[in-house]
Image 1 (cartoon, helix red, strand yellow):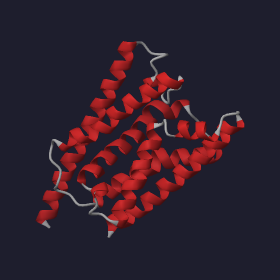
Image 2 (cartoon, one colour):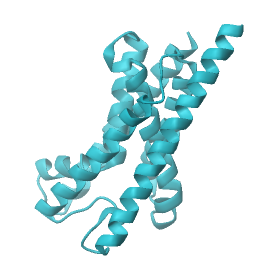
Image 3 (cartoon, rainbow, N blue to C red):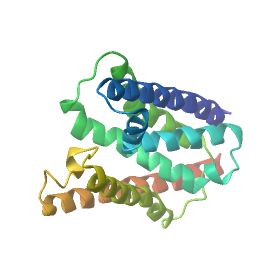
Image 4 (cartoon, rainbow, N blue to C red):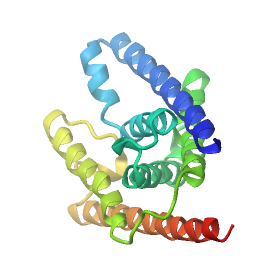
Length: 207
């Protein structure tokens, strides 16, 4: 019951924050002369957005059909790892250089602060005991896929979502180091969730 309750609330927060963020980006970019299509393309360039989309979908499925493949142990692990990293990276690398106001501030807290806490809590209350160490590798795949996606689309249109993944302003060695550090962080967080999963499964067996 707790898992469904938290999953439902997480899904509502994520969907609402994503919807408001899309409206804000469309309003801002169309006001500057861009098209709605360009604004939507920009919207889906952020790892934060893509991860919160995953949070919204997985949390919704956890609440409605928890036995679905879209809410299985691998899906929950990958999503929990990614949204945890979103909150961590935002706090460490981006919060100090970005001070939004108004609705943008509300949405930023929703996407970077609320959804990480809510989804990790939902994960905590979900079923445990199915994860193996190798599942941590699966949780790193979305990060690697995003790096390829971000660099490919940046090379095509010249826009990069994050300064630490911008090859036009960073030397190749620094870019490579940033990617290695981020992949390492994903690995450590994923392994941490696997450790916690195993501990929670053992604890449940003793009760």
